[in-house]
Amino acid sequence: MKSLKDFKNISVLNKKGQLGGGVSVLQSLLAIGLTFVVISIALGFGAKVNSDVSADLDANSTAKAAVDNGTEAIGNLSKYLPTLATVAAAAAIIVFLLAAFSFARR
Image (cartoon, rainbow, N blue to C red; front, side, top):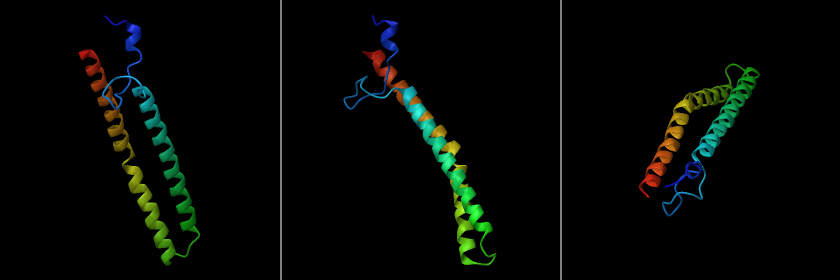
């Protein structure tokens, strides 16, 4: 019987479908979380820069319309970040569960 120490290092499946040699699920979730933080900060700064540029342009110019459309597109993209984060976290948890069940079969 395996000791509790062996279950501490459960990681995702490697290319051969075996446990070990991969990145742990907690590390995957941490990487996903940091990625979304960086994306959120980048989108926030992008929207701020676009709005600052838009304020300096003539009201009826084509450039102002283009910048305003870009700001709207950034807003639309950032609206889907929570959904993408939920899907990414669910995928990591599903991989962890599949790895745990395949480990229990052995």
